[in-house]
Image 1 (cartoon, rainbow, N blue to C red):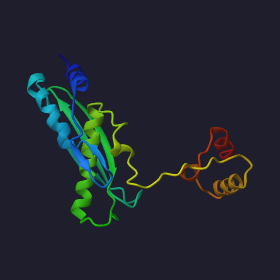
Image 2: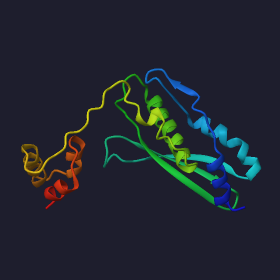
Image 3: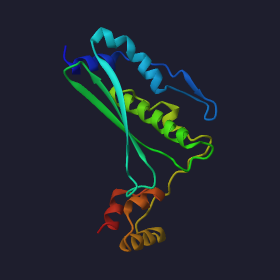
Image 4: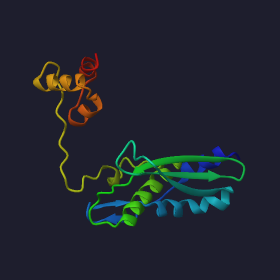
Length: 181
C-alpha cells in the first residue's frame, strides 16, 4: 500500500469527537490532541508516523506580529506527505502572558495543519464561525456612481487598495473593474 493510500484510509475512516467545550463561546470543539489521539489506532496498523513541526516566521517587515507555521507530516519511512497552517500571534491579546500568546497560536496552528492533512471538515465547527456573542453586521454593497463609490475611487487613485475597500464593503466584480481601470 502506498503512502497516499494509507493517508486516504485515515482520511476516510477518521473519527474524532468535539470533546472540548468553550464556555465563553458556548460551543464544542476538537483540539490538536484530540486529533492525534484519534489517529493513534492507524499508526501501527498502517505502519506510519505522524509528526508536527513549527517555526516562527520573521515577518516584522510585512506585519506587526509574528507568524507561526505549523506543519503536520505523515511518513511511512520512505515517503512523507505534509500540510501546513499559518497563524498570527496576537501580541496585543489582553489577559495573556507572552508564552500563553504563542502557545495559543501554536495550538491553533497544529489543529489546522492536522485538519488540512486529514481533511477534517470544520465548516460546521463553531470554532470556525464563532462570533463570541458579537453580532456580525453584513457589509454594505458598494454601488457604482454612489457617493461611497466616488470616495473609494478617490482612495484607489490616491494609492489605496481595493483589498482595503473590500474590508468595509461588498464589492461586486463589475464595480471592482471600475475601481481598477
